[in-house]
Every structure is written in C-alpha cells, then in structure tokens.
Amino acid sequence: MSFTYASHNTLVFGSDAMASLEGLLRKHHATSVLLVSSGDYVEALGIRAAVAQAAQAVGATLFTNDEVVPNPRIDLVRELIGQARDRNVDLVLAAGGASAFDTAKAVGVGVPYAGDVWDFFEGSATPSVTLPVGVIATIAGSGSEVSDCAVLQQGNDKRALETRLIIPRFAIVDPQYSRTAPYRYQAAAAADLAVGFLEPYFTAKPHIESADRLLEAGFKAALLAGRRYAADQEDERNRTELHWLSATMYNHCFLATGSENDWTTHRIEHAIGGQFDVIHGEGISAILPSIVRYLAPRDARRYAQLAVRVFGEDPFDASPLELAYAFAYHIEDFFQALGLPTSLDELGVQQEAIEPLADELSAGGTQTVGNYLPLQREDVVRILTMACHKKSVA
Image (cartoon, rainbow, N blue to C red; front, side, top):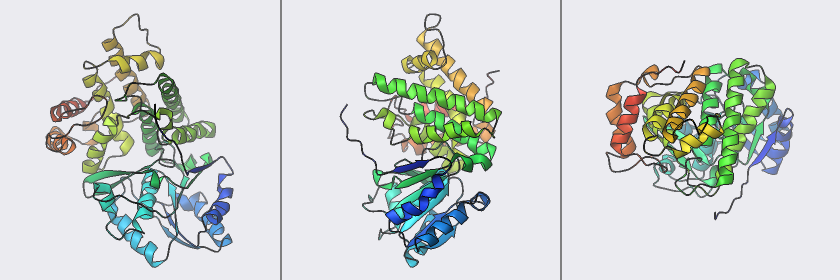
C-alpha cells in the first residue's frame, strides 16, 4: 500500500447544514454565483430562497438555471459556461443529485478554459484550474457530492472526467431535503450506492483485508438502508443513513485506498445509458446479476466471499461457484425488492443493440473492459445477451 490521500472537500452534514452556506460563500470570496438544478424541488424545499438569502448577505449576485436532466448533456454545460463568463461567475452551486453536480463540475472547469470543455471528457486536454464548486444534496446514493468524477453526454456518447481538481469544495447534506425525491430515482440511487461499494472490492491488485471488511460493512449497510427505504420513504433516520453512506462510499474510494478498482459494471452501464437514456441505477440493476453469473466460473472466490460474509451463506455447504451464484441471487433479489429492472428488455434494450454496444465498449475489439477480470468484446456480447432476459428470484 503506497498512496497519498488529501481532500479539499468540506462536508457539512445534518438538519442545520444550510446555515453554513453564508460562511462558505464568504470563505470562497463569492461575488457572482450560478445555481444549477432541475425541476421545482429547489423552490419547494426552500433551497432557492436560502441560497438567495446567503448570496445577498455576502453581497453576491445570484443567477439560476433549472434545466439539468438525468444523464446530463454537454450542450447545457456549454450554454452555462458562456453565461457564467458574461456574468463573471466566480462560484458554481448545484442543488440535487449527480446530474446537477456533474453539470456544475463541468462548468467549473469549463469557464477558465479557452477550448471546448468536451476536450476534458474525450481526453485531449487536462484541466488545471476550476472555479470553486459547492453542492447541496437532495438525493442520496451517487457519492458525487464528494467525488472526483463527472459524467456527461454528447449525443449518445457518454464519458467521464476524473480528476481530484473537480471534487466539490463543499457539500451541504441535509437529509430533510431528500423527503420529496421521487421514489424511482431514489431507489435507483440506492442501487448505485450499494454497487459503489462493490466496484473497489474487485481490485486488480492483491486485496487488502482491512479494505475488504470496510467495504463489506458498507455494502451490507447500503442493502439494509435500501430495503428500509423501499418499505418507508418517510423514514428520515433511514434517509440520513443513505446520505451518510453516499458520502462515505465515494470519498475518492477512501475505503479502498491503495487498490485498483474494477468499475466494469459502471463502464457497461455508461454505454447503455448513453444509447438509451436510462436512469443510471436502473441500468446497473439490469446488468450486474448477469455480470456475476458470467464471471463466476472464471473466478468465483470474491463473489463467494461476499455471499458468506454479507449474506450469511454457509461456506461448508456449497462450493465457491455455488456461493457465487447465490451472491447473484441475493443482489438480484435486492434490486427486485426496490422495484428495479433486472434485465435489459425491461429497459427497452433489445438483442439487436448488443453488438454495437460491445463494439463501443471494446473500441471494435481492440480494448478490454474493467480491471479485475478484463472483458473482451465477446465477453461483453455474452453478458448483455444474458441480461436481455428477465429472471425471477421469487
């Protein structure tokens, strides 16, 4: 284990978290603030009024845009960059979830850059400076409030920018704000949250026992909180758990520092999301069980370990492969308990889309997908074919 860990992110968590906003704006010397969001929840929850009050208190001008959509688009980012430059914006705020946060992160690096911000996402340029970005969470699960990642789409091309530069300078997390989150989106975010603990668990480097135990505990807690949310969306204590797990899960993968994370599931889902505009967590739930079932015969040990340590399967009554299949059963059961799809046909993805998706993911068969058990193009085809057909775990 050799690494350096540092973060400039300030996390303000709890029922009075918004009271810190004025001080945070002062700290970052804000004089012109852009607030991005989607829908009317910012008004209904009183967030817009609170932001306006804090901006006024520090003498800052406030501009707002509520046009962010799921699977956020680069077109809006480009538009906002132009407006931010015209209005001398020196701090970007986002209220919502990952879509709003990713939009704000992209605007932050785009304003001081002379070229097109998409350069950063396609890898032809690397950002070196950003406007300060702050976020206000209204849904729990993505971890984007503390992450070094932003995901955007240009047409059907969905790409990620990863750099510690774009970690938000501050995150305000008040669990009361997620009380109006639509069930479908929060359920999908809960699935994304749970799987966020799995991607670093499958590491291409030798595993670290302490990291294993921390990730297993986080994964188990996310499963429990997700099921509790499905049973009672009004339970603020449980939503508080979801918010804290969200901030814990993707604090630059702090729980798995020193490992080489897999991200196979996310990479495949990003391609599906780019082509079919599906909700990220629903794309994950539709493909992960098939990924596990396909890869288990290749190397069942890590899946088997999760089946034993998280789901209580008996290691003496089953082989590692049988335990791996049991793990696939349990994770599929969790997704179905949340009411999420567990096959691609439920998302409208048909067999004829598989070959083009495999070509995109593998760059025409010249690249592999993932780090733990790298997938060739034909592996992707077989996994997606398996995922096209619904299975019941009842």
